[in-house]
Image (cartoon, rainbow, N blue to C red; front, top):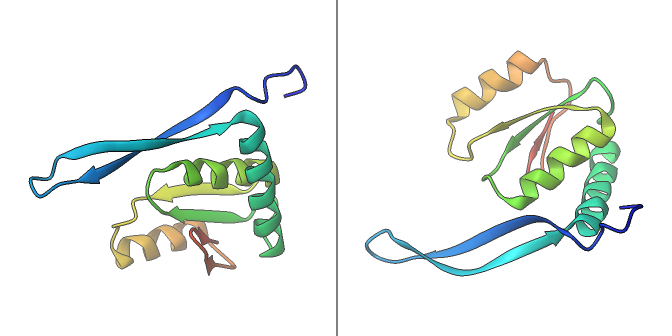
Length: 115
């Protein structure tokens, strides 16, 4: 960033529209620059901090593998928060087991599950 690389693309997320046969057709994409990634991850870190997350706490991300997940993971890195990602269609039992394994103290449902 400080060397002038802020306008470079950091993440490209493709968007698809699915037809009746189950095949996806590209409908466009979302491009996030390094500068935008920095700003969005800093905002997400503020949200996580307001929820009580700090170094040593845990977060579980139960969301699709999309660009937003990367932003929240980068926010956790900023706060030195331990994080894990689970598939959004994971069973409630499996999710509860993961939460218990991490020894969570606090959790809240945003677009992510914060522990």
